[in-house]
Amino acid sequence: LDFRQGILQLTFTEPMDGSYFIVPNFELRNDDSENCCGVCVCYPLTGSSGLTFDECDTIVTLTLNSEDFNNIISNPNLAANITTTYLYVYSWSVRDVSYNYNQPVGPIRTSKVIPP
Image (tube, rainbow, N blue to C red):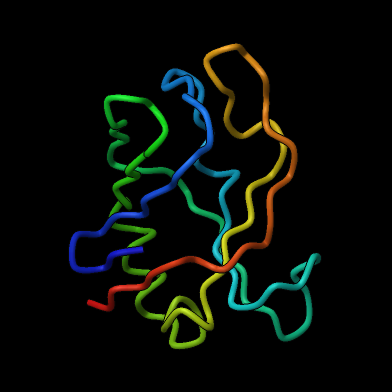
């Protein structure tokens, strides 16, 4: 998660189908709770202003739209550093090039957070 560039970079183990990517099914959380309730802060992304794929279709760069970017950076309890940044991906959010849809993923801690 790079706030200087306004991007979330995702790495997959197999090539992904760029025509099927449901961004609102991606959710940032501030802890690794399975169900985001109580003190957990959750923010489902509303969309993106662009998706780019590397030449192998395994690294996807999601450019945050201005609404998501502003809402995330204005919340001091969300994505403040690597210990408060987790990603949860709901099932049927992405599919690989063989048309296999994902199962729920996470919450998993992000590997890097670059602050604004």
